Image (cartoon, rainbow over all chains, first blue to last red):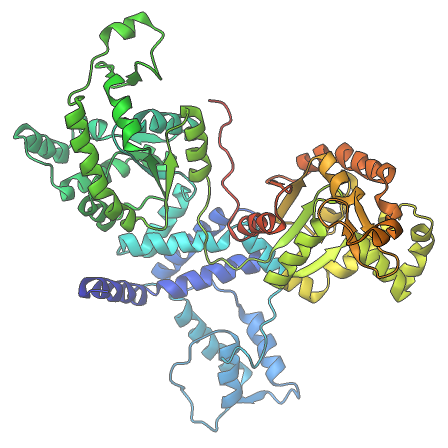
Length: 134
Length: 483
C-alpha cells in the first residue's frame, strides 16, 4: 500500500470518529433489530429526523433504553432492596447498557442510590446517543 | 468484553428479520456512501440517502472492443432494467453545462479530453434525479486505467462491470459490415442486424475508420488498456463472450447484472432440497451439512429414528411405517418441528429434504415459522431415476451394494445371489415419481426464488452448484419480463 492510500484511510477513520458515524449506525441497527419494523427505510428516516430534532433541543435522543429500563437494571443489581449499589456494580451496569465508561463522578467506595443512578446513567446515555459531531 | 466468557444470546427472530430486510446491506450501503462523500452533516445526508431508496438500482459499466455490440446490448439492457443509458456522445450533448462546454473546447482543438474533466462530466450527469432514481449504464468508458481511477476518485463506483469479449479475428471480420444511422446514432450491421425499414436502409453510413488497418490499431489499443481496467474492477467484472447470437449474449449479461455480490452479512442457511427419488437429495444434504456444520434433517430418516427410539410419537407412527402407509401430516410435522426448533438448528441453520411433498405441507411448515431461504429443485429425467435405483442390488450375504451399470458384481456367484430392495421396484418408483411430478409445479409456485439444478451430473459438481447458490446472495428479482 502506498502513502496516499494510507493517508486516505486515516482521513476516512478520522471522519468516522469525528462524526461518531459508527456509534450512530450502531444505535440505528440496534433500534431496527429491537423494534423490527415492517418498513425499514421509513423507520430509519423517522429515527434520524428525531435525532436531528434532538440535536437542536438537546433532549429526547433516540435510544433503546428509557427510565423504566434503568429502574429494572437497578432492581437486578440490588436484589435485596437495600436501595444502594456499589461503584463496581454501577460500572457493570453501564457495560450491560453498552455505554462507554467515562470518568466517575464518585470515589471508588461510594454507594449509589436509585435516584442518582438514574440521573447519572441518563446523562451517560444522552452522551452516548449524541451520535454527531459535537 | 471477553466474548468467550459469556455467550451472547441473540434471539433468532432478530437474525431472521435482519436477513429478510437486508439490514446488513442497508447499513453497509449507508456507511459506504458516507465514506465516499464525507458530508459535513451525516444525519441530514443519511435521511436524503434513505429517501432516495436507490440501493438496488443498476449501476453498470459496459466495455468491449469495437463492433462487439456495446451499443446494442446497452440499449437492450437499459430498456429491460429501465435505467439511463450514458454514452460518450450523449454525455457531451448537454448544452447547458459549463463542464461540457469545456470538453467541447478540447474536442474542437482536436485534443484529448482529460480524464478528470470526463469524470466531472459524468458525475454531473449522474447526480441528476433520473440517474439517481433509475440507475445507469455507462457505455465504452473508462478506456484507460487512469480514467477508471479518476472515476473512482470522484466516487463513481459501478456495481457490475460487463466486458464483452470475442476473438479478434471475429471482430475484424465483423467490422466492415458495421453501419450507423446518422440521425440517431443507432447501430446496424449488414449481416447480423439489418433494418427492415427501407428508409433507414437508405440513410445508413459506414462509420469512420472502418478499414482493417484502423480497426486493428484500435483493437491493439483496447487490448493494451483492458488488463489495467480489469485490475481496477477486479472483483466486480465478468467477461461475456459475444461471438454468439445477440439474444444469448444479452441473457448472460442480464443474469450477471442481476446477481448480487457476496458480502459478509451473517447468514444462517435454511435449505430445502426437493427432487424425485434417486436425485441425490440425502447425499447432497449430507455434504452441505458436513461442510457448513448445519443440521441435516431427512424426513424419512427422522421418522424411522423416532420409531427406533421408541418415543411417544414414534410409537404412534410405528403401525404406519410397518404397513408402509403414509404417515399423517400432523404427526410428521410434529416430529420435524421437534428437530427444527432445537437450538443448534436455529442458530447454525438446517437442510431439510423429503418434506414437504405438497403445497399443503409446505404451508404448514411456513406457518410454523420454518421458512427456508434457499429452495433447490434437483432435476433428473425419469429414466435416470430407474437407471440409478432400479439397477441397485444388495448382496444378502456380505451386505455389499452393487449396481447393474456402475458397479457390477465381481463374480457370477455373487451376481446370482443379489437381491433388490423392494422399495426400488419399478412399480414403486413409478408411483413415487408420479407423486413428485404431480406436486412439483405447485411447490415451485409456492416458493419464490427457487433454484433448479441439473442433478444428472457428478455428485460433487451438483454439490458445488448448491454451495455457490447457498453462499451467494439471491439475485435481484427481474424487474420486467417483457422486452
